[in-house]
Image 1 (cartoon, rainbow, N blue to C red):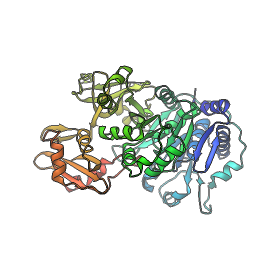
Image 2 (tube, rainbow, N blue to C red):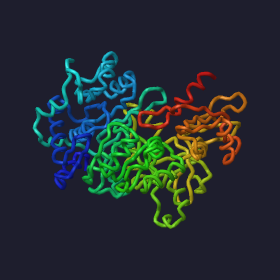
Image 3 (spheres, rainbow, N blue to C red):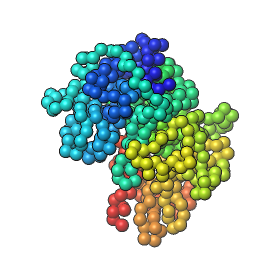
Image 4 (cartoon, one colour):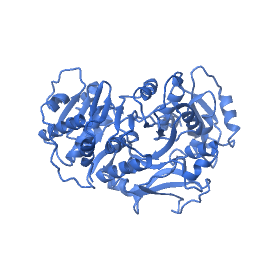
Length: 521
């Protein structure tokens, strides 16, 4: 069942059901479908067809959802772009993917104009939400393109399960971005898995807050539509607006980045809203401190599920859903499991292995690398066979994430291989130190990195953002950590920052914290 069967099913069964809420725009499934069909016909008129590449540079919007579905129906490969990237970085992606058409939001006009010097593609640019006149050759207006077409369902181009549906670009080890290929089978299998795991139904109202160019949120495009739920869209993350809209739009669930959730539950107005519609909040994209999990559950008064995944796996690999017999445990024990990375997702096989490829002991002590296989795992990287062979060996994807396994087969990630700190011959996992830092009453955000040290090789450094109105000294933070950690794990120094650098998806950008220290060494 390729992805082009999902939207017609929702329209057939629920034509008048509210499908999309985006600002003042509200559409039922019939109306939403008609816009997708018009976009399909417009793209066909521009000569776009099966396996061609189309990119989108856009904030969260109904147009983003329309692009996902139009591409899926035409067999076009969609390339979602991180709008926080520089023009140079975007140019590399457009050239590598040989993108033919770019859908771009008007506010990114300056960045798109800067592309022309370095980009041979795309052939056409389709502008949305613009406040300027279109004058360039090959530039079109999105709404005018749709208005000139009939809402006719496009004929089936013969899409196969193994056809590539989307290309998501991630950082490459050589500095060149890597295009992760996700097939129709990958995306479809993941959507069906989330429907089963999260019990999604047509009563659900999903909140698109994390960026749609990132799989932390984009997977829900297809899963929520498959069950004819409602997509509620926020262009960009603003903590107060998120809290307000949960109440106003009666949101039932969403997947947010830990940094977002941390800002929400620490917002001074967090107690002023009704969250009774929420049934579950998911968190993914980065490890989360147990103290933050506790605050989420207590503040939002809903269930919580920690997720873990990768772009290469569509994305989910684990969910911290409690097994039935664990629900009888005392509250603190339940919280301990909820804060873990989780047990394997229904559609994947997952192992944690040592350097010899042997499974680690399920004792929460022995550290190994997570490896996975399944229908949601990418076939590889676009035009990078050597990178593909390095990541996928004997059918198993090697994630580069280090973890332990417990007796219930719940995984707990301790670090990325590249983030592990080796100090004085001892391994220090940054997540363990960060979890302690988040217990300090003055700490809003924390990241732990290794920095060059003449004596220890690497020294543990904490980068901390304090809560508004709170104070703490370096000595206090280090002493606080030493109460719960071995001396070699505690930070040797603390940097107090106004903000921590973030990636386009909202994760804390540790490389950006480390680089200045590496340059000095």
